[in-house]
Image (tube, rainbow, N blue to C red):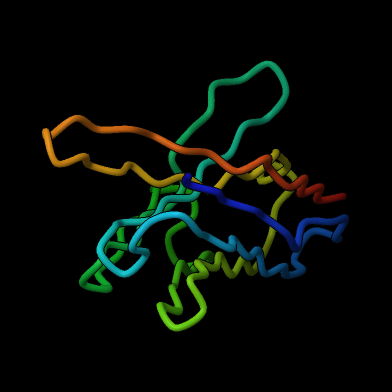
Length: 120
């Protein structure tokens, strides 16, 4: 079964950096796009960044130029490098993958989340 395990969250001052990691198993990692989402208290869970199987990336507008998503297929791991952090980045960050079955059905899987807190 698909398993995603996030790590690397913590408390950091505004302007600082953190690198989140997501270790994946249970599927052919290199074939799938990987996503990072985040959810602040009482807010919706929002897509932050995507890295496609090709290596191409997409970013939510508020993190462009500050965050970098990357993947290491040899380690089945996706990363989110977060620089110039702002208090508004405070949230639980989740790793996500949408797996396609042979029938064409899509199944989303989520990690447990890792807390990122940015102090002013």
